[in-house]
Image 1 (tube, one colour):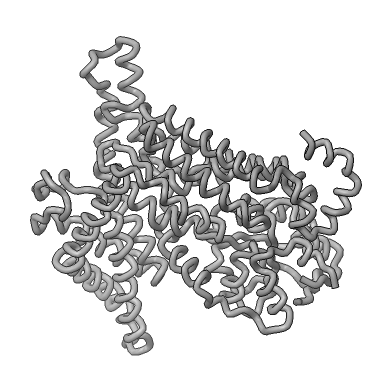
Image 2: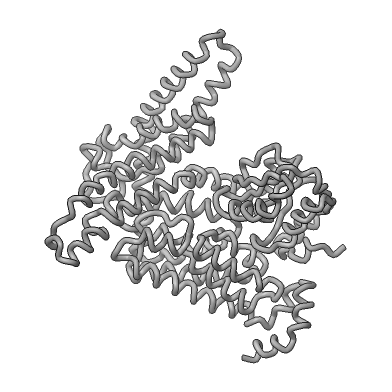
Length: 431
Length: 102
């Protein structure tokens, strides 16, 4: 039976699909599903809090000493070249506390909530606090870094997202185990007393564990990750990341990689005082997807071409990258265009000096403009455009400029449309 | 192949990885299309699909996970977020109250 299912079937999944028609439900325990699940767990701690990230990024871009307000005031001669506008100086005092405390605590809170609801969220937040202040409490210096002394007070702390990602779920797990243990065993009327004090005691204990045990370990890992990132950026090897990131994206690991891994690393790299990071842009760059959609619009299977223009708008302006993944899965060779386009974009960001202040999520060109620093706006836009053009050219190339279309696809509709459009096709192929 | 009776569907859930992006977009479209039929259309992360869903619509790349989360609910995997024939089929079945094979 020729169904619509097989009409739009992916060559990657066709074997699996045929089996699932005859075998019981797929268990969802394959390696890809497992990685997706773990990634979704990490991203699930970050993504609900993206509003706070964006608020931080906007306030930073506008109010820091080299932010928009001060640059414009200096440019118009309203203040001296080394002065700052009082409003900007006052508002910018929230920049440090938000990134050092609020964001890691929100992550830990959400991580605890994922494990054990509201009670898990509360202990997750408390526990995160312990690991966040550990460097001050114990006078820890991040390893692998030179010229940095241990922070004497909280203003010397860096953004410690790993603290939230680890302490939040862990504290949630501990409280969940306790609640399971006492479930149904409490004398009537004592539930509230036990519930409140178990959360308070376990949360407090986890904060102490955070200071003495996990804080130092997290500090060590943060130092190592920072050193690796610095090495990749300085040696200009960062474009190679696209070889892994772009194929992973189209397998719906985009949130796992972007929000689960690169956003925490990016914040770490950007620091607390308005620095920028390219790590925010490796996964979220909307350029390669736009390029692929352009190639698809010009030379893709005729049956799907009409769906492409609206997909381009949703992808590039709306920032929902998922919309272009099916086109790549339909024509897996297009992943080459994604990789080359992505790498070209990252290379442009590195060479031109691009970078974002905060996460661009969703990965829309509008988000890119809003969270660019004044000095990185132009390089960022250029990098996105370069990656789009490169991906479009490579994509058109691997699609054989439309010539291999009939051979590669078994689309009934496409074939029918082809027959109807024979004249036009020849014209395109010959041009 | 699962057979779905369009007239029995009261709650349709669109799932994506984070439940914040593509699923919200598609759920918005389906909500408009199914408004008259009194069907509740929701979006959710694939890991947290509500158990009382009558049918789950999700991208083929996430279908295995959706089936793992709600093994008893029929999962309709689609390819394209815009204009996918499988999504159109299920919408039509609900609107007309007919059965459909997915």
